Figure: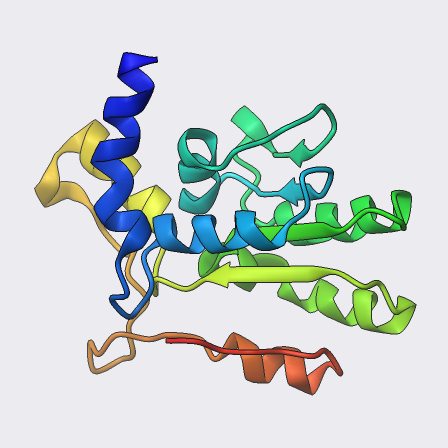
Amino acid sequence: QDLKAKWDEHLRPMRSTDYLPMTNSRAMVEIRKGLPREGILVTDSSNPANQAFNEFPIYGPKTNIVAGGFSGIGFGLPAAIGAQIGAPDTPVLAMIGDGSFLQTGTELATAAMLNVPLVVVVLNNGGWEAIKDLQINLFGEDRQIITGFTTPKGEPYFANIAEFARSLGCARRRTR
């Protein structure tokens, strides 16, 4: 209990800040408020999944679907569609990174065509942050390469995922 209290205290500033763009920790607090206890959280192997392992409360069996050690970047969205079809009376939420979304985001068209009432939260940090972390941890700070999304001029690139979702007929909301 003491260690959990220390961990919660360590995370409190990141969970309660009003800073924009919103921190992943704050996003998880807000998502947990909106997702019922029996709701299903689906992630893949991106940084949001890694953070959810440590920060997102799961209250029951079969309410967390994750690719786990299979490193399935792109797994989250199609898996959430399948979970929602398989459990139509249970709210399902996919929480994925932008790199993951860019792998399989076209599956939103499937959700739209089948009228699957799915919620997808894309935490957009403009890069392959999980890959960058692995590169740094394995090879050192000076050996990470091609993990930040940039334009040919070297400017940061953030996909406008909300507009892409709109183009497929999905309701969307973009926050900064």
